[in-house]
Length: 627
Ligand code: ADP
Ligand code: MG
Ligand code: ZN
Image 1 (cartoon, rainbow, N blue to C red):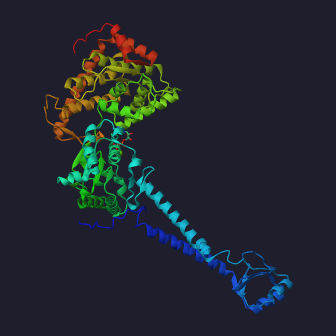
Image 2 (cartoon, rainbow, N blue to C red; image 1 turned 90 degrees about the vertical axis):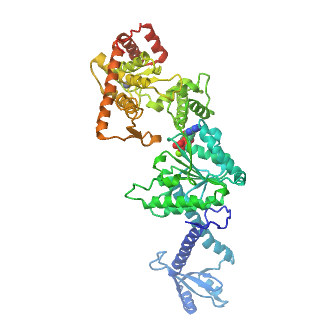
Image 3 (cartoon, rainbow, N blue to C red; image 1 turned 135 degrees about the vertical axis):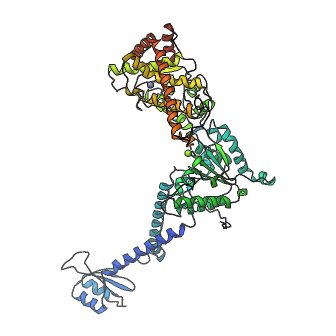
């Protein structure tokens, strides 16, 4: 498709030139109708009579009052009979040049008056009956359309609407976001810096003959700062920022999305250099193949997008950024060179990144000297920027709740736990029996962790229930960030997970539902070891499963036959059973520690890692028999 894009590139402040006539016409029609209706109503109770008839009425004393105009007389008859004000008929007749009329009326006791001339100049009359109603209806229409498009387009305030496309133009000052606000995404920032530079000085690139990238795709899990980064690019480049969510294009009616895309690009081209940002692009960019039912609207929208991306001239300085957390579902056509050929990975932050994100978000928060953000970063492996921002805020809220005016480290830790496990539920009453069961379960985890070599140290054990379902939990904290896990580490982790149940079993000779989450996690680790990490002797390094939505913690998909799959299950079962035995043996050899620490935990409800280690070290550690 080839489109002529040489329209006059006027930069006017009006929202949308195409939309304008519609408002005007609608407002005009309404004003016209109202004027006609008013004149009809006022005429319907007017009746013309002859001058002679009027004189007869005056003589018969049938006239109440007369208004004398230069060209006519408006006569109000006396209302003797059924005098309802609405039914009252007015009469009018032409004004003859009859000088004695005034005397005659006076004598007949008729009230008469003539309106003061020209109070209402024709211009004022015109304004009153035409311009003002027109303006009112125009504004109403405008407001209505705006509120409608805001509802569709979403988003907050501070930007100017770009008509049909629902795209919002962020002018550089209103994004207020720069690369400084995005922490821990150094690689992503590095690749985007080039785009910023290009938007600043396109000539530098075109001079040497380089073609500029048309688009870059920001890929990563939710909450890692993709949207934020796109805004930061616009902020850094100081160019207008057209931002639009993928779902904002697609409507019920076929063709609407395509016309929005066309509109968006047309608008953007006029404002070049600028950035177009399409958030959640998978909503329109889903692969077209294997889609039997078909979605005409989405397909048309996508086709239009593809055509526009080919059609525009990147040397003018329009860069398209898009964000998604499901790159694998995107249509291949979108990803080919010349379209979104650049991929900027915005992954979960590492230790340093998390610390920096915490720093960025605690910039405006008053913290006392107990705060150690590095420690918080260590405890939050796997958290994304949005989580961390949330944690800092939760900590501040907690400090206020506690009546303090600075945030302390324990506020931050509590916030971490709130985000991970929900709020404390202090009012939930557990029976003594349940309480001790939970305590032994948790200490089982903690002991298994402390008694093995390649596990993470215990940070905290608690049996205060949380809103998200946990009756108690053991928090472990690594001493340093780990990027790789060895087979032994994974196996030990499984033992730790199963040790909760093992403790229940050993001490109470009873098993409960409390271990369900442990079991789920242990099984998933064991399965991954077999199917993805090549860590079982039986299958070696055959990839038996792969993860589908990598950035959305997607489910694994099976790549093997049913037969093999059944064997995989058996292999997983073996790992779990062996680990469970190991956990039991570990605890059996340390029953004294288990008992002592558990009763201490029942008494205190929460103990910290160092306290736990102190009790453990005070008891002589018996090496388990066969580990
Ligand atoms: P995404 O678009 O990737 O889902 P957002 O960009 O909307 O995530 O991030 C949501 C919020 O999380 C941001 O507004 C910001 O407050 C915080 N955030 C996320 N990542 C970062 C980061 N790298 N640095 C600072 N803040 C971040
Ligand atoms: Mg986003
Ligand atoms: Zn458990």
